[in-house]
Image (cartoon, rainbow, N blue to C red):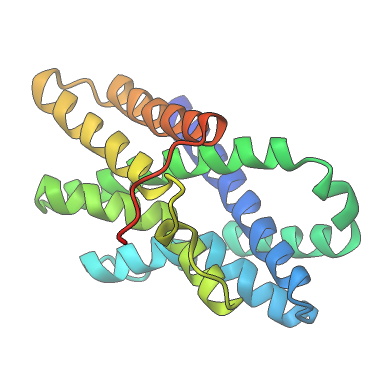
Length: 204
């Protein structure tokens, strides 16, 4: 495994861990038992990638071929169970990792779809699915309105980063540089949207 691939894998694992903690904390707020917390952590962490892989016909899905993902999710649930109050003090850090995670998952999902020869438009959509649909499943299962259906800019940042990557790959094919730039676009838009309270218009 190359150095770049190793770093991508590491960040992917960290993103999975953070998303799993997000699911476990959501379960805690709804007073789920530890089994329910495990299910919610699982769907939050790998739900988007699973849906993407099923839609593009890439099976078995990624986490089924690498048990490290399940180990990370189990660890996240246990840490959330025993150290919940300490984790809640790190909300800004968690937001940072979550934002990095959606940026990485967007580009990784997009690249995986392109590698199968599918349209760039579909690849951009699958990148967004990879990044946000775990959160959709988390919110639906915990009886909340999914974040991407509210005014807050979330999925839009993923679509913008994916579009940036595809356009620059067409203009100047440099996969690594364009991947990092695409991730940076997602992170920047998401962070600015939260900081400056940007939102999409609501249908009235």
